[in-house]
Image (cartoon, rainbow, N blue to C red; front, top):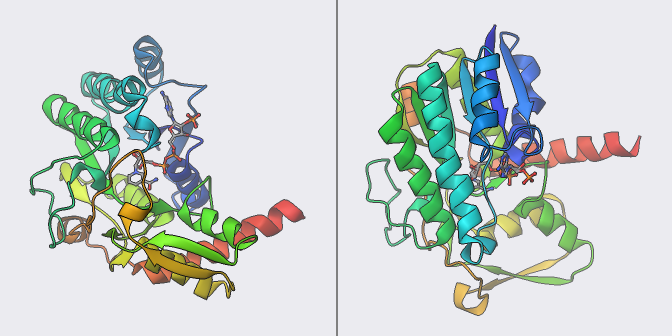
Length: 292
Ligand SMILES: NC(=O)c1ccc[n+]([C@@H]2O[C@H](COP(=O)([O-])OP(=O)(O)OC[C@H]3O[C@@H](n4cnc5c(N)ncnc54)[C@H](OP(=O)(O)O)[C@@H]3O)[C@@H](O)[C@H]2O)c1
């Protein structure tokens, strides 16, 4: 049995890992929420690792409030940089492979070509900077690590763009959504599958990888397609980022090049529209269960 600690065990990605874990009988996931195991608590993490026989740690814990990070810098860096550095040190000492999730927000969005892992990083906000610093810490400390940068995560779990759009469509005739931020929506369950694939294949091709769904979209395209799929009457109005001011600046273009991960794991990645259909079905199944 392969023992895998999942930090941030109540978050969106952790829920997606849990939702498909029954397909992987040899992998034992141990979920720890922020209240069970705070990753900023060095001693507690160290004690947990010394008392448990772990093979992998999947770090799903993160400070993910992109706008709030601008005014809560200390907290963002404590969780996304310092705690990640500590986790990396503990993983390295215990020979535990660290699978860490990072973000397209490490790039400034000035490119018009899909970003490769080797492209220059230049975050334009606190969140992206704190995540990049976390990456750098892992690279300088660990040998056995996978950093997976992903983008625009959504799923049937927790709060995310897909669920927010569906909620707003219940009360709104019209919704304005930005059309000049281009990236790729990623179904978090597709990312969860990739994480399982890394563990199951016992891959030792450590390093940094990009993963999102295939295809390219704006947030406007994403919202439009959600409503189209669900036959919602709400009209989506395309607007410019400058007309929707937010505390944090976001990259205008953050499409990721996935060639490296496709080659390393020999996988095909679904198009975002195909994965959206799956997510919408899974959301309905969950809602049905809740109502039973
Ligand atoms: N969501 C996206 O669009 C997106 C895009 C690109 C990359 N990513 C990255 O993907 C990863 C997973 O994201 P997600 O969407 O699953 O995020 P999420 O739903 O916000 O989950 C993050 C989890 O981390 C937990 N956490 C926060 N501080 C913690 C601490 N000190 N100790 C332990 N746990 C702590 C949170 O718990 P509490 O709620 O109790 O605080 C939450 O359950 C993150 O690394 C994120 O940076 C996300």
